[in-house]
Length: 149
Image (cartoon, rainbow, N blue to C red; front, side, top):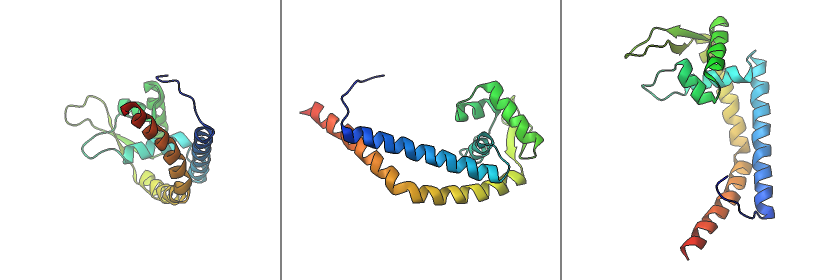
């Protein structure tokens, strides 16, 4: 913990609302993934692969970093996705020594459905998320201005 500061009631309310919104979104996301027969972590892995920056290649190591999980857990997750036909482990390119992961058509189709539903939900939740963040951001602005005076 860097700073210990006194929080206002508005800060606590904003933090609580933000965390509540995140929990609601995670529950929504898990439910949507389940409708397609995916575990939440499988969905997150597919999204991490699909959302990788152009020119980057997904490996088990990179997936473990993106999902904040242990390397062996990422390897097990990838093996599940390979076994279920969502991803393929291709041949290494550009000097990579590890298998490069590619999405199969099944994963692309599932992501199209899930991304659309998630984007709709995010847009619906955006006003309350932005309000909570605005309250917390204003607090930070006020503190930085106080240091300048």
